[in-house]
Amino acid sequence: MSLAIVIMAAGKGTRMKSDLPKVLHEANGKPLVAYVIEKSQALDPAKIVLIVGHQAGLVRQATTSFPVDYALQEPQLGTGHAVMQAEPFLKDFEGEVVILSGDAPLFTARTLRELIDFHRSRQAVATVLTAEMDDPTGYGRVIRNGGGEEVLKIVEQKDATEEEKTVSEINSGVYVINAAELFSALNGITDDNAQKEYYLTDVFGICFGKGKKVCAFKVADPNEIRGINTPEQLREAELLLQGEKYL
View 1 (tube, rainbow, N blue to C red):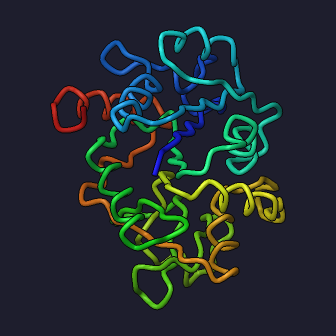
View 2 (cartoon, helix red, strand yellow):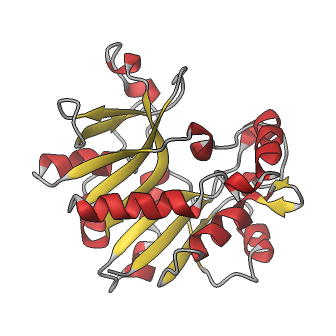
View 3 (cartoon, helix red, strand yellow):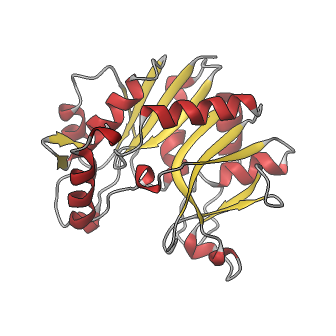
């Protein structure tokens, strides 16, 4: 089955304390989004769609050497709304969609392949890459169905109950979803949440509610799912990217 990659790169990144789009901040002389695109290319996808928004022109300019299509998210109304913008580019696509974040450059192509293999072997319609965190504060929690491989829902920190906040398994923001199920479920999400945004993670609950198989695959090394939101986190990622392990 063929693959398409959707990379979310529309956000401002206000905590970076810079007017530069977050995905264009550099680690070891290379924009963060370039790492994500290069690792995506290693999967030999049929198509890569880059979701741009904040300072879209700058992001386009920095990525013109890559074979990507650009989908504009304007205004930015959440992660679910972002992926909706990719639908026209994948209208006739019948394979699987891998969704990545342009500010998370540490995952490896090997981990993505393992995620896809797991997804296919379980015949799931959607699979989320997860990690165990000693301090999961601020992350979305993955709520498994009875503690097994299947996922009941993913709940954001601000919408989680006190019991759900005790869960240490977190959402990495990396997903593989069958294309038809993805866009069908996106039609059903709403902004009825604390942030008043359209959450991509609501897709998982919708699929589960329809009786579809939704799974979670836990990464062995939590460093791989690190996103970058602050200058301090950028420096930490830069050090990790200096080793071959995360390239």
